[in-house]
Image (tube, rainbow, N blue to C red):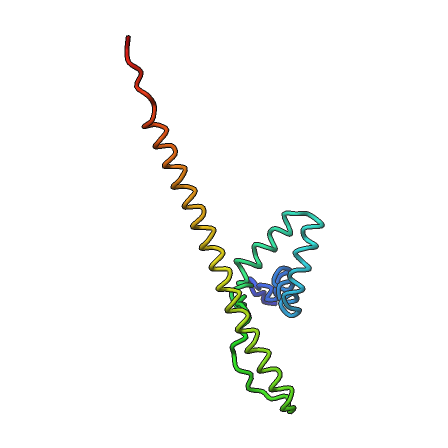
Length: 140
């Protein structure tokens, strides 16, 4: 009887690899649920899962949080010409309102900046006038 002295390694994935694959198969919601449960059971576990989700998995690298772009053309017709016209007009009106609101906010920020700068300059002038207006009392 001959024995093989070469070491054989277990090729099955370990617990962590199986758990990761199981969570990956179920999506981001499963990862978030695992993180919350980790925080409930023992907070360092939740923190470790959060760190792994952010840096190890690149969870947020594939998603982008961009502002909704109403200006993208609606190429798909609903089949109802009246609704399509209404939708296009509503989108155009919302774009106009958004531009007007952004212009309004810019005017508010500019006015606030100007008021703060004017207050700074007036305060500076008052301090300069106060230091220059000290009367020189004659020495007797």
